[in-house]
Image (cartoon, rainbow, N blue to C red):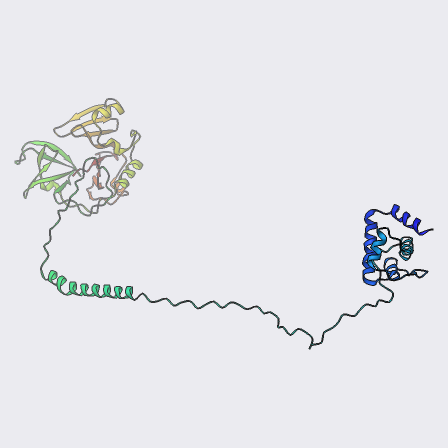
Length: 384
């Protein structure tokens, strides 16, 4: 095939980019070898079958050929080139041998030492100056304090200790128990020396010192505050407005043992006596008026009054009122003996037919009923 037809066929079967790339590879090869044969070998891998008339061609001649200037050797070269398969990359020249990489001897090597990492050396910190002014001030304060302490302890304090201190006794406040305080659980070691207790089954209290006019009949265990006393009789307080005289032979100021806690006494009463009539608590009944009792239990079965108290009877129990205020509750038929009463606490006062146990606010008195195994038991307010 004629070389012009071969070139035309290549142009029609390849893109413009491929053609430009081929021309650039030819130009680059000619620039380095200036030989058509070497360029053919680089681009196709094979030498031309027929040597070119002009094998040496410059880049300028190649550029002029592309611009349209006739060049017979380049025309033969180009027609032969596009007729062969073109390598993707330029192949090596036949006579080219790979050059071994040059090795440098120790004398030819760069003697420049390798760069080594060095740590920056921080500049030394300036030393702090001691605050001599503050130190001197602290020492001065210490010396002044020591001097003041010495002067006070050796002169001022000694002069004060030489003179006797005047003392003022503070008055001692004495708390008086009121009638509203019904419970006090602090035991009392000994009975009041100004209080006496009846130690016979009954004892008369008289209006006059001559003991001729009976005012009231006291029961065993009743306690009264002494207003005046002689060898044979004592004047006692019955109420806030009423006094009387009693024989000393029928009384005592000494009780055995100590008072027990109110709660202990009241619990024993609830457990051993009939309290079914109590709607609230026993303590709530103490202090109620006759009108309040009538409201709770209706009118009493019967009533009785003397110069000191009023008595309201309901079945097997009755209430003793003083100045229209309940001060005692009596159970008329209680199955209680002295031995049973002693299960509450050791009896503080007793006889064959009577017994007494006291708490701080109440007293429990037992009276045997003649001819029966039953007893009358009284829970009374201890307001002395």
